[in-house]
Length: 528
Image (cartoon, rainbow, N blue to C red; front, side, top):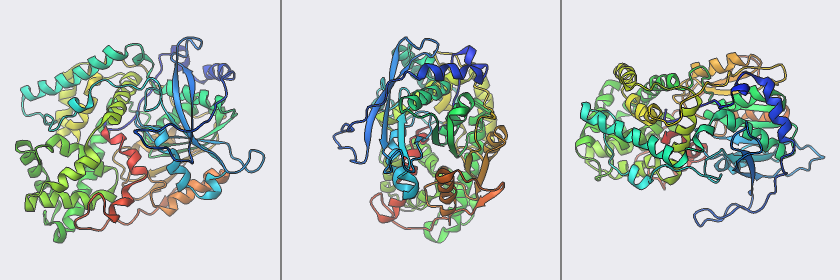
């Protein structure tokens, strides 16, 4: 959807199984060593002194390892212990997407882990092929024009409006093909996993540890399938369903986001004394969709229409920490006619910029290439109409987010058959019960494919459950990264307390600072 997954390389001989993976690993032994240096300024800002930057070159096409190459950008927070002391090697990071920058996560993880863990790892983030600081960095349209608000309503009212939305999807696919025809066939999860092994070799590591969030769990699963003997420790936070790549996964997301949205509506109703939007979920649901209809006719501030509202409130499906701010903005608009709050949360959480467009281009590039998508729009229309009746919150916005795959200039392939190997050590899965972006049922499917993995289940619904305030979850993560200690089967953590209303929250108020951190990184996923 707006966020999740992908897989497949065009390497027919390698898709067959793990046996070919060793060949790639042998080829990587000659990879030049990484040379670390100061990080360049980004948008005029000097990088943190704790970070070092580098890059590695990887084959564009692993069938032609001596052919054209592309560049993968890295950064790291170096371990404070020496290699001959208690050094635990490299911990490689990926926040998901596909299309999110791993380099955005590095310092956050380094400062959030307990010191006796973080100081023993070289913590390394990387921008997957086509993303962020990697070269080339893919863009398909001018974001200022493409995302100009208000955009057409993502829930079409008739054939004419549907044709407009279809035209946008087809145009985006066409422009990506026009600019990047040489690259698109090679934007796959499998190739990103192979890039990870080039990074491992260039770092001089025999084995590597990995922490992946959201789509990053799927990338980790593909790496573990292709290179099980190269895995030291592996953590999946908010696991993707490896069985629904990718059209079916998005339909499952629609149902899960509907459930989470209704939980938000119920929470708002519970606090009717504060927000006065309805005392029951039925009443708050009516109020929400009445607001959406009104914005269709009269966008808030001339900017926030129904599509901008969809994009913004989708983020509330990722974390309940922002529910008070969102409910307050909604209440101020409905009860006072004040558009300030809606515009503020849109600018903070829903508005897309050049980095978001880069993430979107790679999201589509990977998902559309990883697996086959329906090419007949009649199939999409039938499926979405049926799902919309059950899950109106996200079905059509999600469909249009992925619709360029119906027109993508490169056909989808066959997903890597994710599976366990005797060479793969036991690893850790962290999951919330009511996660909307990566539903719990999909995490069970992931665990089923890796029987030695251990899952810890959080009772809440937030996406990304480690390093976001749960001492229980963070304790399991730290114990595993520290010494490989895994919990017993059936381990659980209590959900964090639900948020409390905080009237008149603004983006600069102290209460909102807690939503920064992992959520900021994961929001790159929610641009999708």
